[in-house]
Image 1 (cartoon, rainbow, N blue to C red):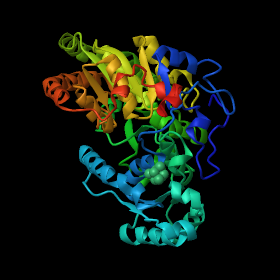
Image 2: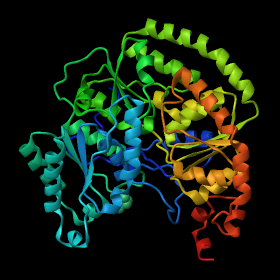
Image 3: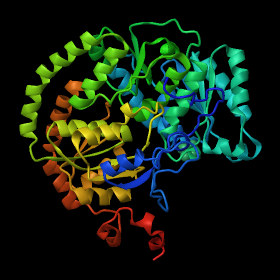
Image 4: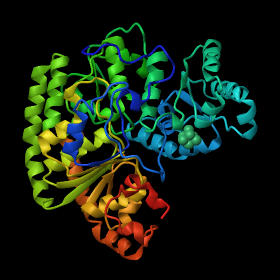
Length: 506
Ligand code: SF4
């Protein structure tokens, strides 16, 4: 362990990202400049030290919150139940997350079923008199209806305002039912970025589900992911390793064995940073400190580091050689077909760094990217995991590199400036705007598509398919009217309202 104990599992609430990592949600410049600032004494801050110079907007057009990330993680544990202690409005995400859960189960060959999330449906009178009784009743209902192996309870802005004591309810229920009952503090206004919700779920699992006296399993490797297809099993089987996928689609027992694994990896450091660092700190499960597994540069180093940490170096080298020989001719063919095409990535932060690497391996031009937040550092503190620096050092600069938490009005200006042939997107709410500008989207619902050597081929082929829709999108562009004023459509700087908020009045 290269750092002193940083993650505090003694208390029920997680330390938010902006305090732990110096996370920002607004920035405009180039990838190289952001990487440089993140690595100076100014950017690489600890608690109380100075932060990256964030561009702060005067309003938020729309976004998501930490509670929703808890829904899509704790709510996707197969034999658990999540209780949202909230008004029903916070529960609207259940519709989307049910469809994602069902698709994920089908992708991984599990029986397809509905999500198990219960909302306590707080009303005006609950906001005045408190709603502990409703929460207790919901915990009892969850137990009687589903016989779960664990119950998660998530907070919301409303329950934070009225300060309902959910921890006491959880402690009492845990004794009564004999299963982990886990409070997750994730109210939307708690953190400026929704990724704190990932950390909150992982914090609760680490405290109350993960086995405290692990029996080590020398061939088990944790893969922290979402609901993507099972691409890690065949890759890691080449090194004689078995995959333990967490958190989404895992069972409570699979979460419990996190402490028994030989190492931890992830497809994206935005998602995995907290859990992986805490497993190393608390249980000595090493986090693989390497670039993410994207493109030749990242994948080679990633596999080599797994080989080194798990004492499987020879198998790692054999796999690298075999895969280089297999995919390089295919990638050369794709490069010819994609020559002169310009791509744009609009996804979560570390994931975007990986995807841009893949686009550059395919010979595509990437002049711009939008990431939904930026962490100047991840929880391990290791420079080997600096995904933005890895991108810039290995694949060059991205001149228009912007941080914005999914603000549609800004996205219009960002795309207009770069005018790409297609965009890659994961959070679909921005895709319709791109379509109205004549730009087709690659919607990466399956987050594993671009991982590893085969991932470069997968992504190249999907891009070719999507480019075939260009004419359809041009037709859309010719027949739609954007909902913005002429003044805004004529603005050159998408961040002008952050720099001059007085313009809103005029
Ligand atoms: S927790 Fe807060 S921000 Fe999140 S959905 Fe509910 S009210 Fe909205």
